[in-house]
Length: 329
Image 1 (spheres, rainbow, N blue to C red):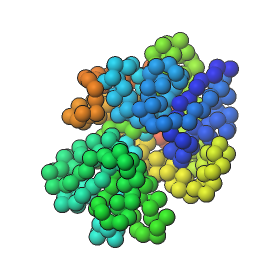
Image 2: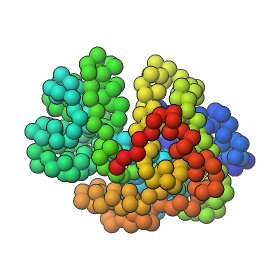
Image 3: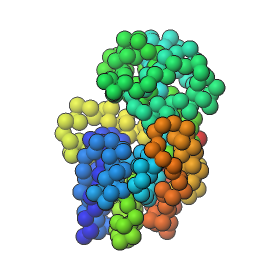
């Protein structure tokens, strides 16, 4: 049995449900893998832990992987988990005055972001829509990090930038209709990835491939049975019982809206598309997020995704019926 330490990007939540289900159902064990889950402190932390060899595998957003490369580290993304970013612009209907359905509607509005990376993606979305100069996209306020929802609630801003389901959470908590504009539906860049370091990958190639196969099975099983996936999550963190509905919604949103791209259908689960990495790098390069130059073609590999495993090659066919997966940008 090979032990792999798995650094999560954050505390257990619905977006991570497939990994907990994979462990609960013995999918890692069946591959000869004992996975040690470590709660996280954000994607940059997870990417750095993996790159420095302090964790064998990390769960991190693609932008964080590139940011760490720009700092001189050498993270290696070995699987693309969600083909679309989870970033979203959200608002309340009684604040915005109409359903938010298109980026152009944000012209003349004030928008507050909760984090630097999601602000960058929002800026690119507005640029592509031709309304960047007409939107007051505020800087990230470190004193209200992840608290911008309060500014939406009191109408101080017209909308906020966070992740999918932030608006739904407001709707449930305050009984006010919310709308979300998923940025991933408009920008063809990656969301979450599984990242490691080259030394670990080189010395543990078979174990890494086994970890990825089991993870793919976990994602398929969770997509087919979201309630079981969230139950495995609650078993890990009982405090999530009171949030079971929203955590289920988080996972279902990821499964339905974030994991599917045309490339996944063609190449299979986890397989990287270089164009999405290059597009993300170009977006980040126009900001001050990166500390130096990056090489988006050097930050990922498809070497460890088992191209012969049915769970990889037939993944889209297996789960698409469960969620009506829709490809997109």
